[in-house]
Length: 223
Ligand SMILES: C[S@@+](CC[C@H](N)C(=O)[O-])C[C@H]1O[C@@H](n2cnc3c(N)ncnc32)[C@H](O)[C@@H]1O
Image (cartoon, rainbow, N blue to C red):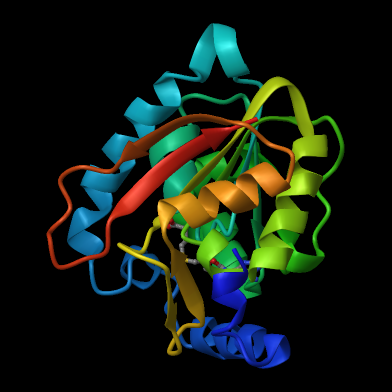
């Protein structure tokens, strides 16, 4: 996993750039999806199916935490019908405000807490969540910060709870995108970070139905 760190010369700059990048991103589904809003439907359907494998009877459906939630595209499209209580965490206030004031509509009141934090500095409450979902945000953390965040997440799971990462995975090694400060890692590198955090991989699945031009997206469930 040390491979990725080579690409990141200054951590401060790495995080600063992402901050700058998302300040200019509109609070909309288009903004959340980059240039690929048309794959949002397929993405959400893939997530619903993957989540089913860990749903009722297994992970529980009491409470979910959507990390790097943005405006709550996944919360709205996947979690609202499944979980009783929902929480969201994102570093950008304007995304969370938009979620609450507009995007989630009347369901916004079912979101118990909106945490406006950088994940690298955020400690979710202990023993609280059945599912912690991180979509397209693990790529915005350095190896070390991702590992440490996963360690904190593990402590905030309820019994049988699962953490799910859904992200771009490099076809080999690590790839830094300097525009939005994101690193895509090969699945094997991701697994090393997960294991170092003391978590066990339960299942991995590739998201099908995405165009070939975009990087492969994988879902990894762990506990
Ligand atoms: C590509 S968007 C994905 C949003 C959402 N997960 C989805 O799938 O629709 C990435 C999100 O991660 C957030 N983000 C990026 N870096 C972050 C960090 N270090 N801490 C917290 N949130 C971060 C951004 O503000 C943005 O909302």
